[in-house]
Length: 49
Image (cartoon, rainbow, N blue to C red; front, side, top):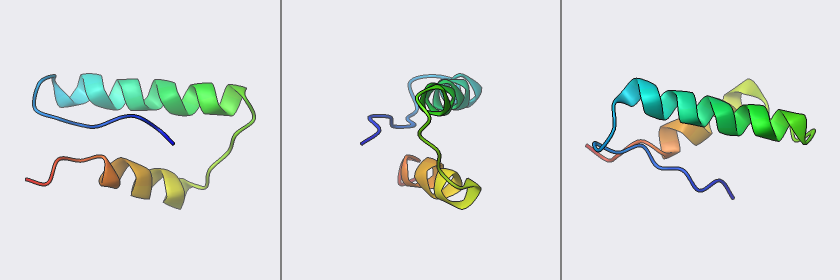
């Protein structure tokens, strides 16, 4: 499970960069997800507003 949530406390660009770092770390561990899965994951982490 990826413990990451996009919220209002930090600039959106900083949060996207953090998400990119998580994905990079996963790739370094040879954990791969399709682009569609990555988009769905990012959307699921958006705040409900």
